Length: 127
Image 1 (cartoon, one colour):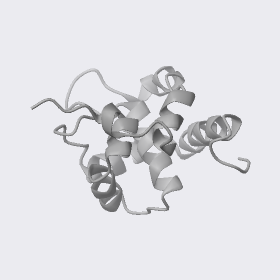
Image 2: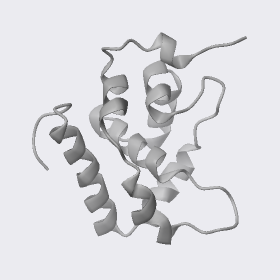
Image 3: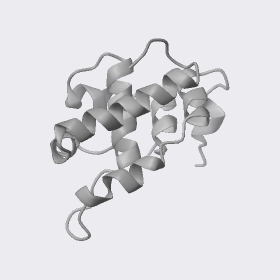
Image 4: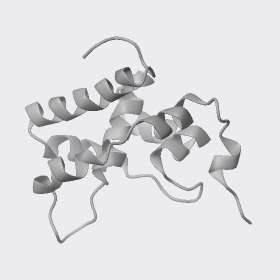
């Protein structure tokens, strides 16, 4: 069966528009020192910060609830670049990844992600 998430997420959907308007590729270079070259595959840093953003925007404080919430919403799967049949990261992996970054770096990077959303007019406020 062929299924296209993009065909099932309306053009006016918030997360579809957000995906089209913000570029988080800068995170790869800034987080590279914190990722090893061997061992278990880590969460892609862009996916991790998108998950953090969803948590912030949807007011979800539990990583377990966050992953469950994302798995039930087509627009969030589309925003995260996951397919319908592709498993999301384990909630414990999200928690461990958050602890991987020094607190100040995490705050700086997350503030930048939120600032991009503000600059694009997707959310209001300031960081």
